[in-house]
Amino acid sequence: MDPFYRVMDLPPLDNEAMEEFGKLPFDPYTGGRQRHRRFSQYRISYQPDTMGWTMELLPHRPFLQPKAVNQLVGGVQRELEPLRIDPTPQIDAAAKGIGLDPAHDWHVNVHQCRVSVGPDIEGVSVPEGPHRDGHDYAMLVVFGRHNIKGGENQLMPTNGGEPFFRVTLQPNPQALAFDDTQMWHTATDLESLDGGPGHRDLWIVVFNRWDRRKYGEEFERAAVAKAAQ
Image (tube, rainbow, N blue to C red; front, side, top):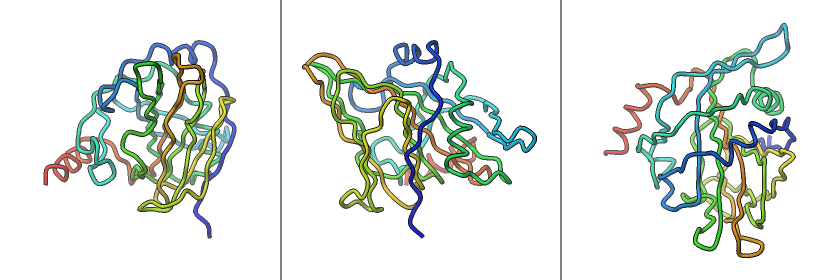
Protein backbone atom coordinates (compact mmCIF):
# COMPACT_ATOMS: atom_id res chain seq x y z
CA MET A 1 0.00 0.00 0.00
CA ASP A 2 1.30 3.46 -0.88
CA PRO A 3 2.23 5.77 2.02
CA PHE A 4 -0.56 8.10 3.11
CA TYR A 5 -0.65 11.75 2.11
CA ARG A 6 -3.63 13.95 1.36
CA VAL A 7 -4.50 17.56 0.51
CA MET A 8 -7.74 18.75 2.09
CA ASP A 9 -9.67 21.90 2.92
CA LEU A 10 -10.24 22.79 6.58
CA PRO A 11 -12.71 25.18 8.24
CA PRO A 12 -11.56 28.82 8.16
CA LEU A 13 -10.53 30.76 11.24
CA ASP A 14 -12.63 33.66 12.41
CA ASN A 15 -11.31 37.21 12.04
CA GLU A 16 -10.05 37.40 15.63
CA ALA A 17 -8.02 34.20 15.24
CA MET A 18 -6.62 35.37 11.89
CA GLU A 19 -5.47 38.62 13.52
CA GLU A 20 -3.35 36.56 15.92
CA PHE A 21 -0.86 35.81 13.12
CA GLY A 22 0.15 39.46 13.16
CA LYS A 23 0.71 39.38 16.93
CA LEU A 24 2.86 36.24 17.22
CA PRO A 25 6.04 36.47 19.34
CA PHE A 26 9.42 36.21 17.61
CA ASP A 27 10.85 32.68 17.38
CA PRO A 28 14.57 32.98 18.25
CA TYR A 29 15.44 29.36 17.45
CA THR A 30 15.52 29.37 13.62
CA GLY A 31 18.84 31.11 13.04
CA GLY A 32 17.22 34.08 11.32
CA ARG A 33 14.59 36.81 11.67
CA GLN A 34 11.89 35.27 9.53
CA ARG A 35 9.68 33.30 11.95
CA HIS A 36 7.16 34.21 14.65
CA ARG A 37 5.40 31.42 16.54
CA ARG A 38 3.11 30.18 19.31
CA PHE A 39 2.81 26.53 20.38
CA SER A 40 0.39 24.39 22.42
CA GLN A 41 -0.17 20.68 23.06
CA TYR A 42 -3.43 18.76 23.37
CA ARG A 43 -4.97 15.37 24.04
CA ILE A 44 -7.84 14.60 21.68
CA SER A 45 -10.54 11.97 22.19
CA TYR A 46 -13.29 10.76 19.87
CA GLN A 47 -16.85 11.13 21.16
CA PRO A 48 -19.23 8.64 19.46
CA ASP A 49 -22.35 10.50 20.62
CA THR A 50 -21.35 13.66 18.76
CA MET A 51 -19.23 11.87 16.11
CA GLY A 52 -16.47 14.39 16.74
CA TRP A 53 -13.09 14.86 18.42
CA THR A 54 -12.77 16.89 21.62
CA MET A 55 -9.56 18.62 22.70
CA GLU A 56 -8.02 18.86 26.15
CA LEU A 57 -5.34 21.55 26.48
CA LEU A 58 -2.31 20.01 28.21
CA PRO A 59 -0.16 21.87 30.74
CA HIS A 60 2.28 24.05 28.83
CA ARG A 61 5.79 22.64 28.39
CA PRO A 62 8.79 23.53 26.21
CA PHE A 63 8.85 22.36 22.60
CA LEU A 64 11.50 19.67 22.21
CA GLN A 65 12.64 17.41 19.37
CA PRO A 66 15.30 14.69 19.55
CA LYS A 67 18.53 15.51 17.74
CA ALA A 68 17.98 12.42 15.58
CA VAL A 69 15.16 14.23 13.74
CA ASN A 70 16.38 17.84 13.99
CA GLN A 71 20.11 18.44 13.66
CA LEU A 72 19.64 22.22 13.92
CA VAL A 73 18.02 22.52 17.35
CA GLY A 74 17.37 18.92 18.43
CA GLY A 75 17.72 18.45 22.17
CA VAL A 76 17.10 22.16 22.82
CA GLN A 77 14.13 22.96 25.07
CA ARG A 78 12.50 25.76 23.10
CA GLU A 79 10.48 28.11 25.31
CA LEU A 80 7.51 29.25 23.22
CA GLU A 81 4.37 31.07 24.31
CA PRO A 82 1.03 29.18 24.10
CA LEU A 83 -1.72 29.67 21.55
CA ARG A 84 -4.43 32.22 22.28
CA ILE A 85 -6.97 30.65 19.90
CA ASP A 86 -9.15 27.52 19.90
CA PRO A 87 -8.08 25.14 17.08
CA THR A 88 -10.84 22.56 17.76
CA PRO A 89 -12.85 22.90 14.49
CA GLN A 90 -9.74 22.55 12.33
CA ILE A 91 -8.22 19.68 14.34
CA ASP A 92 -11.54 17.81 14.40
CA ALA A 93 -11.79 18.09 10.61
CA ALA A 94 -8.15 17.07 10.18
CA ALA A 95 -8.46 14.03 12.46
CA LYS A 96 -11.44 12.86 10.42
CA GLY A 97 -9.67 13.58 7.13
CA ILE A 98 -6.57 11.66 8.15
CA GLY A 99 -8.67 8.84 9.57
CA LEU A 100 -7.18 8.72 13.07
CA ASP A 101 -8.19 5.57 14.92
CA PRO A 102 -11.08 6.63 17.18
CA ALA A 103 -10.38 3.75 19.57
CA HIS A 104 -7.32 5.68 20.81
CA ASP A 105 -6.69 9.12 22.24
CA TRP A 106 -4.05 11.14 20.38
CA HIS A 107 -1.41 13.67 21.36
CA VAL A 108 -1.43 16.78 19.13
CA ASN A 109 1.07 19.63 18.82
CA VAL A 110 -0.15 22.83 17.15
CA HIS A 111 2.32 25.52 16.05
CA GLN A 112 0.89 28.81 14.80
CA CYS A 113 3.55 30.49 12.65
CA ARG A 114 4.22 33.44 10.40
CA VAL A 115 7.21 33.14 8.05
CA SER A 116 8.24 36.53 6.68
CA VAL A 117 10.37 37.80 3.84
CA GLY A 118 11.53 41.32 3.03
CA PRO A 119 14.39 43.57 1.99
CA ASP A 120 16.44 42.56 5.04
CA ILE A 121 14.77 39.24 5.94
CA GLU A 122 15.50 35.94 4.16
CA GLY A 123 12.28 33.95 3.80
CA VAL A 124 13.71 30.58 4.84
CA SER A 125 10.76 28.22 5.20
CA VAL A 126 12.52 25.17 6.68
CA PRO A 127 15.86 26.04 8.34
CA GLU A 128 16.68 22.38 9.04
CA GLY A 129 16.11 21.33 5.39
CA PRO A 130 14.35 18.13 4.28
CA HIS A 131 13.50 16.00 7.31
CA ARG A 132 10.91 14.03 9.22
CA ASP A 133 9.67 15.13 12.63
CA GLY A 134 9.45 11.72 14.32
CA HIS A 135 5.65 11.56 14.68
CA ASP A 136 2.84 9.34 13.43
CA TYR A 137 1.30 12.02 11.19
CA ALA A 138 2.20 15.59 10.32
CA MET A 139 0.17 18.35 8.67
CA LEU A 140 0.85 21.81 7.23
CA VAL A 141 -2.09 24.22 6.99
CA VAL A 142 -1.87 27.55 5.15
CA PHE A 143 -4.16 30.37 6.26
CA GLY A 144 -2.53 33.32 4.52
CA ARG A 145 -0.17 34.28 1.70
CA HIS A 146 0.73 37.95 1.19
CA ASN A 147 3.04 39.37 -1.50
CA ILE A 148 5.05 36.17 -1.96
CA LYS A 149 5.96 33.38 -4.30
CA GLY A 150 7.49 30.09 -3.19
CA GLY A 151 6.44 28.20 -0.09
CA GLU A 152 5.89 25.02 -2.10
CA ASN A 153 5.50 21.97 0.16
CA GLN A 154 7.36 18.86 -0.99
CA LEU A 155 7.28 15.20 0.04
CA MET A 156 10.20 12.89 -0.71
CA PRO A 157 11.52 9.43 0.20
CA THR A 158 13.12 8.98 3.61
CA ASN A 159 16.80 9.93 3.55
CA GLY A 160 16.11 12.43 0.78
CA GLY A 161 15.88 12.34 -2.98
CA GLU A 162 13.68 13.89 -5.63
CA PRO A 163 10.23 14.93 -4.35
CA PHE A 164 7.39 12.65 -5.41
CA PHE A 165 4.72 15.24 -4.51
CA ARG A 166 4.66 19.03 -4.65
CA VAL A 167 1.90 21.47 -3.76
CA THR A 168 1.58 25.18 -3.07
CA LEU A 169 -1.15 25.23 -0.44
CA GLN A 170 -3.74 27.96 -0.82
CA PRO A 171 -5.17 30.00 2.07
CA ASN A 172 -8.73 28.64 1.97
CA PRO A 173 -7.32 27.16 4.33
CA GLN A 174 -5.75 24.19 2.59
CA ALA A 175 -3.81 21.43 4.38
CA LEU A 176 -1.32 18.74 3.46
CA ALA A 177 -1.38 15.77 5.86
CA PHE A 178 0.98 12.81 5.57
CA ASP A 179 2.41 9.74 7.29
CA ASP A 180 5.54 11.16 8.93
CA THR A 181 6.99 7.67 9.47
CA GLN A 182 7.17 6.96 5.73
CA MET A 183 8.58 10.10 4.11
CA TRP A 184 10.52 13.33 4.51
CA HIS A 185 9.14 16.80 3.87
CA THR A 186 10.33 20.33 3.24
CA ALA A 187 9.16 23.61 1.70
CA THR A 188 10.80 26.05 -0.68
CA ASP A 189 11.85 29.47 0.58
CA LEU A 190 9.67 32.56 0.21
CA GLU A 191 10.45 35.35 -2.23
CA SER A 192 8.81 38.77 -2.25
CA LEU A 193 6.79 39.58 -5.35
CA ASP A 194 7.85 43.23 -5.39
CA GLY A 195 10.87 43.40 -3.07
CA GLY A 196 8.76 44.58 -0.13
CA PRO A 197 7.52 42.73 2.95
CA GLY A 198 5.58 39.50 2.53
CA HIS A 199 4.56 36.54 4.65
CA ARG A 200 3.01 33.07 4.82
CA ASP A 201 0.70 32.25 7.75
CA LEU A 202 0.45 28.58 8.66
CA TRP A 203 0.00 25.90 11.26
CA ILE A 204 2.39 23.01 11.73
CA VAL A 205 0.48 20.15 13.38
CA VAL A 206 1.64 16.68 14.44
CA PHE A 207 -0.31 13.70 15.75
CA ASN A 208 0.88 10.78 17.87
CA ARG A 209 -1.23 8.01 19.32
CA TRP A 210 -1.42 8.74 23.05
CA ASP A 211 0.64 5.68 24.04
CA ARG A 212 3.39 7.01 21.73
CA ARG A 213 3.09 10.64 22.85
CA LYS A 214 6.07 13.01 22.71
CA TYR A 215 5.12 14.91 25.84
CA GLY A 216 6.15 15.18 29.48
CA GLU A 217 9.22 15.02 31.68
CA GLU A 218 10.20 11.46 30.75
CA PHE A 219 10.23 12.26 27.02
CA GLU A 220 12.15 15.49 27.62
CA ARG A 221 14.81 13.83 29.78
CA ALA A 222 15.38 11.12 27.18
CA ALA A 223 15.62 13.60 24.29
CA VAL A 224 18.07 15.87 26.12
CA ALA A 225 20.22 12.92 27.23
CA LYS A 226 20.48 11.51 23.70
CA ALA A 227 21.43 14.94 22.34
CA ALA A 228 24.29 15.13 24.85
CA GLN A 229 25.77 11.78 23.78
